[in-house]
Image (cartoon, rainbow, N blue to C red; front, side, top):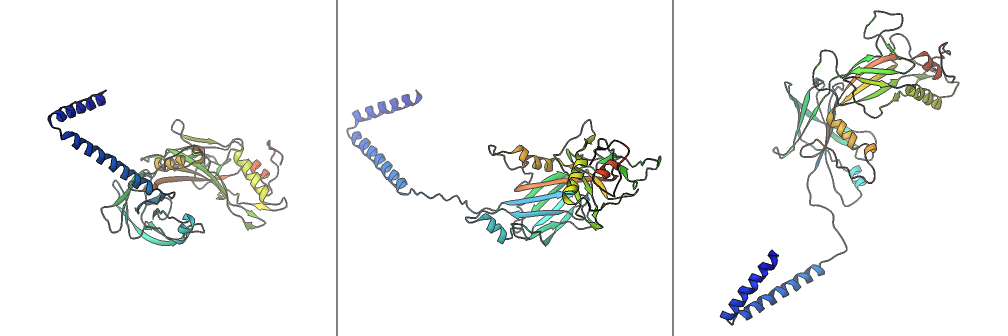
Length: 371
């Protein structure tokens, strides 16, 4: 209605002007013809410029990707920084023949109350893969140590442009404390030396832990992973280490962590050893009081790394879902996360050793499935 009123007013004013000056009709006609010809010429120009080819290549723009997982148990921390690329050809071939690492950047790690750490550029060669093997990492010095529970800030100043920076914030979670299985051996009451190996409960393989060690502070993990490692030999020759896990990250319950494996680990161990070796093979491992052949490991994940893992997990993505790329890198893409691990060496139950044919263990007198 407002639009109609506006045009009605315009027509009324035009009528008054026409009555007062006969030349107004000529002016209006010329203006109308001008608009018509302008429209025709514009449409012709657009139609004549049509093409069945579409160029989707954007204007050149530097986009940086940062990846790093802070781990206080590693001798040095490694941060990978590289340029994203867009090519009109085969992207895999381009990535295989070009080093896209960022060179000559200034990279620092800082935390509250800590001495700032300056990372040094290190040219290295990665393992075999589809992309260019030679690349540059930014690493800390061996004497630089991270403190579990602390908050860390990464700052990357780009070469030739000190005002252009990439930043990220993450936490190194507090170190968990495993208290089951404990280090009390049957028949060794009162012997709680840390180097005494703990024993699995053969019925349910229960592992319990607290999110931080005694008398420690700092941010705890938001999720946790379990791994179990076993070193063994076949006919006297060391074999590749067996690893159980990790499965889906899990959280705490009532402030504590608990994993009840049931027979899952025992079944995994027996199945994989049977698949790898003949029944006649002599499978052995160190099984004395101070054995370090079997180790359980609890890994705490910080919020940023856990978010990145969840968003990119196949369990949360399908072909009908458009999932945005998760990143905590300000000014770029990627992720800076943190982990912290706790380990304990354990002895395997007699039934597990018997079923896995380890150390030629005889069938226990207690209830044990036939193998």
